[in-house]
Amino acid sequence: MRRQPERAEQRAIVQLLGHVGCRTWVLGTTRRRGDYHGTMQTPGVPDVVAHLPDGGGVLFVEAKAPGGRMRPEQRDFRELCLLCKSPFGVHHVVGGLDAVIAYLVRLGLLRPEQVAHYRVTSAKLEAS
Image 1 (cartoon, rainbow, N blue to C red):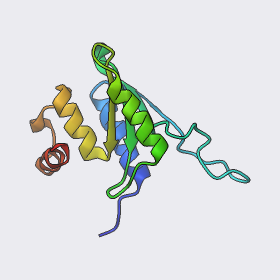
Image 2 (cartoon, rainbow, N blue to C red):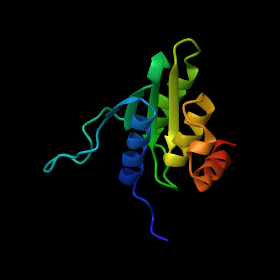
Image 3 (cartoon, rainbow, N blue to C red):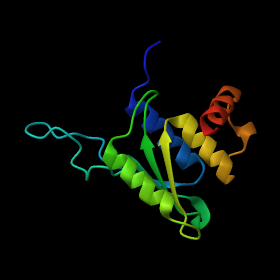
């Protein structure tokens, strides 16, 4: 089976976040041609930033294709987000579409019956 590229996962995530009422910003997806290899973002900055509806906080998404791993800077950013306690509303998800679906279900922004059964099952496995 052919691996789903990270960019495709990210595109699906942004589309889903828009459907549940989030405002999203995508960071660092286009690389310059020429002398610099990379995204021109500060190392560790996540791929997607979303404001959750109704003042629910900010969600950072580090999009990863299946089998993808975080770099040390990405792990540091995630740890700092997880240290933020309520009522600050800082959320951080690492993974693909299934991980974001599981998180949105946990937050109550999606109901399991709104999601294809194979996605909900996969998301439950990732969340555990």
